[in-house]
Amino acid sequence: MRNPNIEALLERLLGSDKTDFLFKTLNMPSILADFEPGQVTRAELAQAMNMALFEGLLGRSANGRTYTDETVGKGGSVYFDHGALRTVRWHENGALPAGEAAFTRILRPLGFRQNGRYPLDRLKMVGRAYAHEDAPDEIAQFFLSELYPERFSDAFQQAVTNVVSTSKDPLTPLAASQLWELERDGALPLDAAQALLPVIVGAFDRQHDLPTEADYEVLLAESAEMAWIATEGNAFNHATDRVADVFALSESEKAKGRPMKPEVERSRSNRVFQTAYRADMVARRFRTANGDTVTRQVPGSFYEFITRHREYDKATRRWTTDLRFDAGNAQGIFKMTANAAASDTAVATN
Image (cartoon, rainbow, N blue to C red; front, side, top):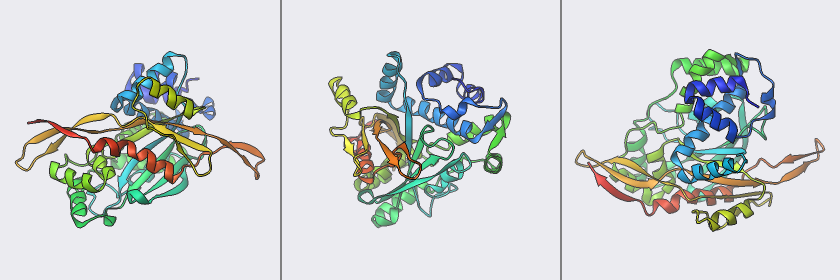
């Protein structure tokens, strides 16, 4: 099933080939079978944004691309469960709103509402989940985490300021007004949605200048997560395929020699199970003290897998998918970038 509004949005943004690939690859929420050509609902725009962000993640995760291509090649598909991104809530954040506020101003007009809060105390962060009101089980959720520099050393806080104080705001005044209209009306004309989509997709990126190597080292010594933000910004940290049996998948991927997490994370409810590939290493540039740049291999994004069991809702007398997350699971999954960060190396100097 190809929703023509989503197709028009993605073809304008990504071209026909990538659009075809995404329609063949990802689940399509059942509510999007009903549409009005030329009038884009918030659910349609949310789905188009998620599809574009998934495609971008595959461009940064070779392991994720290989898995996805293999899955589709065998006649399967990917059930896009959620995407995750990291933010830092800091008063010296340049023109970008601090922490998750930079993204809730986008997610809420699109129909997403907070679906849980998860303290990530070991990481000195908090995670919040956002599910779509119109199709919470079918439109991918967002797991949005905030890091709190005030819980770290003075040197760390100064390095955070040095890195993020140069941040630009990717939202234009026009995009802000279009989001306001979308929140008010629940839909936008196609031409307005086509203009808005690249702006909101572009918000999921690094908005600050190249970090210095010295600041990166300070951040890395105390928080692999903040070091990751320094190089990757607010890009998707990972995207997640919802699978029937994550344990069987994990063993299968290990047998292929894939860089899988050693153990599957289990939620305290015993209904949510997660594992992932280790983060793909990517080349990133840093400024040096003498004004040159150095390129280092650092951890980038990764690909995750999740199995969600159902639970019986006594209020509605229905079986529903458990869409919650688990703080312990999340902190275990976050190690997929922390482990790689410990071994990053400088590879070239300009």
